[in-house]
Amino acid sequence: MKWYNNFLIVAIGVGLVVAVVVYNASQFGVVKVEPAPKKANIVSYKRPHRVVPLEPEIVYAPLWKTVEMNVSAYCPCVKCCENFADGITASGLRIKKGDKFVAAPRNYKFGTEMKIPGYNSGNVVKVEDVGGAIKGNKLDLYFDTHKEALQFGRQYLSVKVKL
Ligand SMILES: [Zn+2]
Image (cartoon, rainbow, N blue to C red; front, top):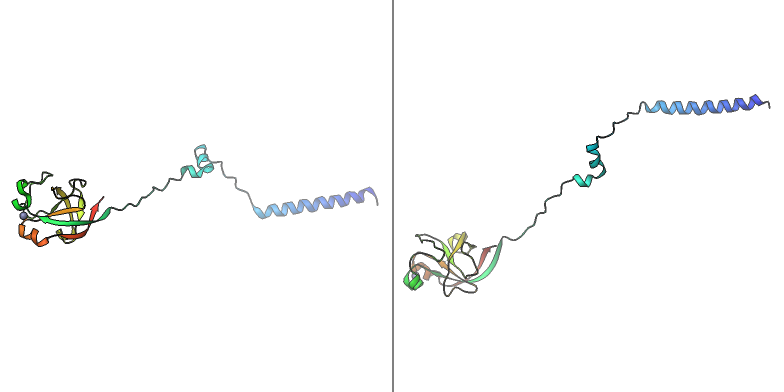
């Protein structure tokens, strides 16, 4: 073999490589170069967790507590209220006909909302009064007349107290 025979083989080899590279390049078209993101955006690219707002935590707490209570009834008469029969509750409410409220132990603040089965159609009533005998788990429901109070008598009820 002469030296130019080797040269010919190398030349053919290089030609093939160039042909393959040119063919492959023609399959991909022009590569579009995206502009670099602005500096302000780079932070969010690098730390996406920093810009994702946190979901507010929702805490579910019971609104009403059920308390088993010894429930009696009273009216504004002297028999029921003795020397407190002035038509004004301990909270300062001037009693009107048709009012619905309860006398509760001191640990229930005035204005505490309660739902008592069979009283005010089970709708919310507020604590507006206290009583010497109203202690522990006792409640006294207000009625306009002594007759209604007697009819209610004494009942053990599941009272809902708003927390
Ligand atoms: Zn009475």
